[in-house]
Image (cartoon, rainbow, N blue to C red; front, side):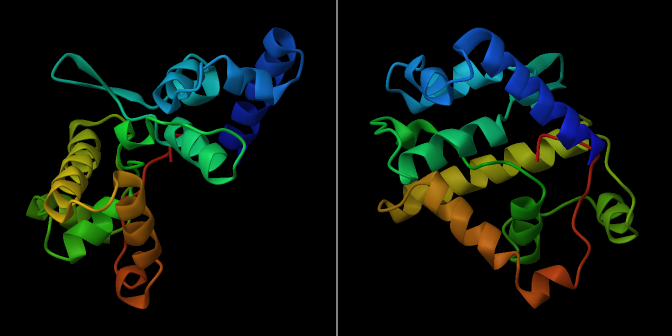
Length: 179
């Protein structure tokens, strides 16, 4: 909870200092683009922690920034024409659901550690691979279906993860404010 509290405090302070406390000014600074809003929010320390390094390259997931853009659109606060450019809101639950449904396979040693309740290190290669593979799998599902978006599939899989079958098996966990 301390990480979340610090993150929210930093976010509020920045909005107050740079946007006069006006959250809609933050949204307007994106120029009507969901991707633009994600880029604006990615510069805020409370959202910037969702970039990991993999093989020497940055891997930006921006789960919470993408959710903010999608929720503002869904709530009718702003109309984004490029919402389809957002990806799965990569976290730990959707890869868990995809693994249990047989879409993703994890290394046996990793599965044993997860099921023993051991935390993954945020930004570790296995955590980045797990999240990135989930993003890729959802993009393949979207392409195959042809009538959906990454956000819709994310919503479906995330809610599916609330089912008893998925709750009965420990999911991957990491100490992070990214998800």
